[in-house]
Image (tube, rainbow, N blue to C red; front, side):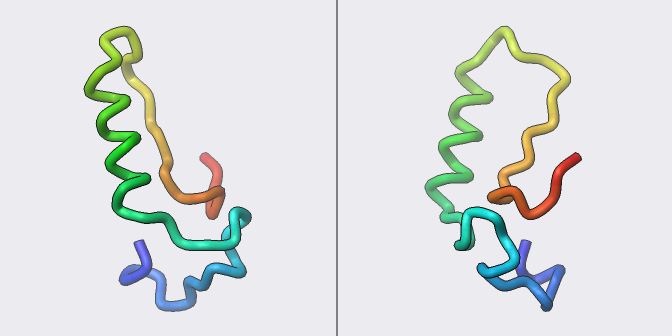
Length: 51
C-alpha cells in the first residue's frame, strides 16, 4: 500500500497508523472461514479511502 503512494503517512489515515501484516491476515482468515459471504470487496486500509 505505501509503496504505491509515496505521500502516505499515518496522520492521513483515520485510525492514525499503518496496518500490520497480522491485521491483514485476520481478514484473509475470516474470508476463508466464512462460507456464506459472497461477492464482497473488503478494504483493509484503516479508513484511508472508502468505496
